[in-house]
Amino acid sequence: MRTLGIDLGTRRVGLAMSDEGAKFATPLDVLEVTSPDQAMGRVLEIVRREGVERIVLGLPLNMDDSLGRAAKQTIQWGRKLSADSGKTLVFVDERLSSFEAEQGIIDRKRAGEKITRKRKKAQLDALAAAGFLQAFLDGKLPPVNV
Image (cartoon, rainbow, N blue to C red; front, side, top):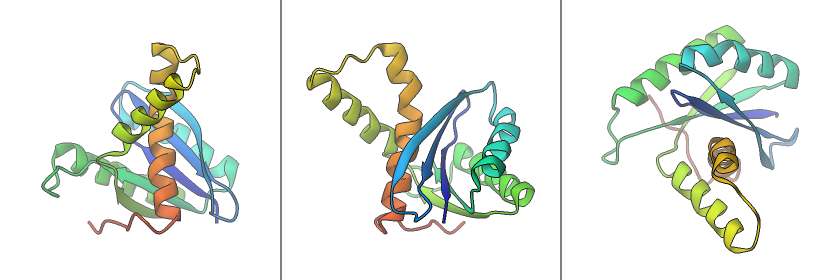
């Protein structure tokens, strides 16, 4: 089951994709946008083009598990995406995904890889999406019921 992971932001939207067997997640792209609504059409095109069957959307919960403004906007955006695409939508907790992705980039730099600040910004959101998508596929990150 081909699954698209989305790390929704106000300026960048990180995308990751699973393989057909839903075993492995890889970073796909980072969309530069002026608002999440601008990303909707581009994401729908990717869903159609790549044969996506399920969407996993990172939900930015507060540290106390409550829904803040960003989480509520993400829920609204995700429900519209699901309705427009006709695909199953799963929300997952993405609170620490950007931190973990950044730590991975730091580790790669320490190992000698040349990563500029610009390249880091370009990769970070897609790496975060791949991280929580992989955790979901591995059964380590349960769906969040909203």
